[in-house]
Length: 467
Image (tube, rainbow, N blue to C red; front, side, top):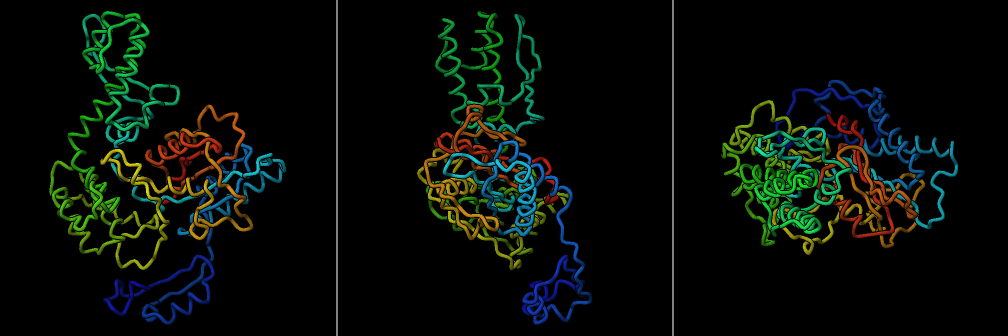
């Protein structure tokens, strides 16, 4: 209806309107009284409101996960995207079927029931777009890591011949698990510290700060420890690769991105004129089109949509190829406001004050999901924005919280130490995928608490929902 408003020239000559289900009387009356009514050529109810096969499969997989865990959780969802409510009802039906087959599912002596919160990707479009400066997120963003395999070159053997090596970055690697959620600023120092500890146990001469050359010398002197020392070499290589790419391309972007995401600069002052810092990036030929798109999107989110005219000016200045421009407009499919003429409104949850938790100016943004998880555990999550599914309600969850969860790139992750857990679980499911910063938020929350176990994840099919 906004496209045919009286205050502007209609976007289209005529309109053919099809409702996929019965149109509510109130909406129909509003439509008939609007300026759009005189442009309508077709108005039909075709009753094809159903979820696609991918969604049905996704609901079944999520219900299977809960059944496998022996959980029949209280279910909540964010209400802004109609699809999420439909999906949640579908999931509940499949979960009820498992419960009917096993009436004891979810029954525990615990006073506090487990909870499942279902979110869509549009609830926080910022976190997946930002360049991250934490080790795992930075490595996967800047380096060509495929299927968790990192390839690198190193000198090996008495002749120090250059060889290509590859390493699997997964849960089986204890040092990777220890380092992956650390800020890049401390990774090299942490690797050196671990190397020095190892050297001390083997009575080897170690330095407070080791380099790749130092490691090569140690390998020459102690070839019997080649396997162990290669582990440290791997992460020094990985950290150096990250920093090299960061200084080449990303350093200039991070401050601007953080300012747009948080709305304040490094000194905590409100950013009054974001364009002052954005225009030089748009004109910089060394910045890739996709990185420029990140900045345009962050500006759009910060302004809660912008005019098509201003958006096109930025795209033109940035010299973004035609094939990539639709990335910006397609974000609207997530329920995110792209055009300022869009009259739809998305609710915003009240954010916690986390200014005291900021250690690095390059990482001031805290993912929204961190607040969702903490508020759920503290029984403070807004019931209007995140309603319970019909007939359910909180059982009182405000107790010291969370056992442990280590999320993975795909699927679901939890800490191995939590396999014999005795407390309730908080399960977070995001339709449309999760980012590494959100994984880290779950991990950090898990470390800080102890009574609940947090499991966060997605299913591979969820990325198809908004294609």
